[in-house]
Length: 390
Image (cartoon, rainbow, N blue to C red; front, side, top):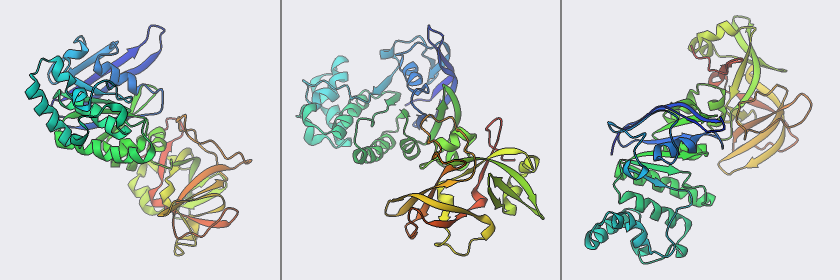
């Protein structure tokens, strides 16, 4: 185990394309840190620089106290788990797991003992005599992890290891990998494009966009206090609803206007973010989490001045909750996420998604009142897209 430090890592390719820009991160001993971002954002390039598979253009990489920029990959004390498992098909599970020990000339008896211990941790004891072709996807991934574990590296690198698994198995493997990592206590750098993986597995999560680090924090902090519009939209599923808006004085208080919609603000909103007073009658961005929206017929005591009028377009019943999609007369804000949904296409109307309770009886075509928990709204500067907090 070791601490790992990325100090301004930059990657520029010969054609001039800059894939990663001054990436600085510190992994504490035994930490599970997830680097997440959309496809093509530079996260895999960052991982490959750490592994030694890509040359570092600028910056320094430390594993423990050792600068390893110019150290060969095999000598960096790093083990990598690939998304395609990279197993030897002609070898058994036992032989695959023990292969790194064989390369180090470890005696067969000792090798067998180490492999058996790793297999027990990974619940592979009954599979040791099988070939990879006779294993499930999850079992193959465990074998790949076993091969990394027996090396006893200072750092695990995992590059989208669950992307080849079906949805149900991904859920199971998320829990398995996180549990195994905690038991082993090995410092782990995990790369994924899936924000659900990031939020459920990481001790901390680093969000990257276009090669630039946007924010690094505990999952709950990323969700509750995103630093900018991109992080706000990228973290959370369904994504945060983002609209052009304006703070306006209303009697002794304030309200937020989004196109044709006006919502009264709790006094606590301004008290918690006094900087919002500087945005009165000035364009900004307001963000509404889907879970901060509810069918007015379900919770009838909600103030009328904190409701939206909506006509349901799409209903997705998920059992414990119901996702509702409707058009809102407001201008959406581009978060910069290439995978974000576009406008519904109706003139002057933008998409809005609410995560309603299962008690809602609203159906497509119904005109309803939507309660908004205005105390939970997020605000961002219109030009910089940075969060307005103080």
